[in-house]
Image 1 (cartoon, rainbow, N blue to C red):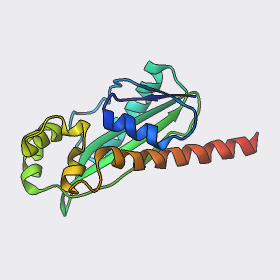
Image 2: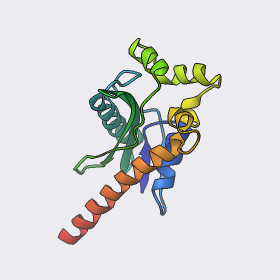
Image 3: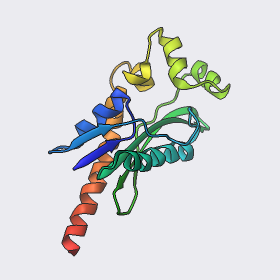
Length: 175
């Protein structure tokens, strides 16, 4: 089975490979999200994940398309990290969607996000490191390494795989 990952981000690729057990071919590619570079709501982040999954499947000609998207969500308790994933199966439905971990962002980061900046460059500046989004991510920084970006997306992808396995099992019973 060929799984097309709608990103070339190493943290996302590793997450998908960790979540699927068995014999699979993984093909990462840059699939457009169709949303802003910094998704600013659950709805926009979900849409980005869905678009990446659908575009990955179209562009990669595989059996399954996976889209993973990180964003932020404003709440009465402040701005939170959010992350969403989507899984699509070639020629079948339903679309599978899952959400993951959330933590509040420090106000000094939130102010910059609300001002229109993107989290990745803010985190690079904040940590004085390059490409935080491809390594530990903001989640890794603000959990002091307890959870890194790949682990966060692995959990999310396992939720998608669980839905996929359930869907497959039900369909096999019907046949």
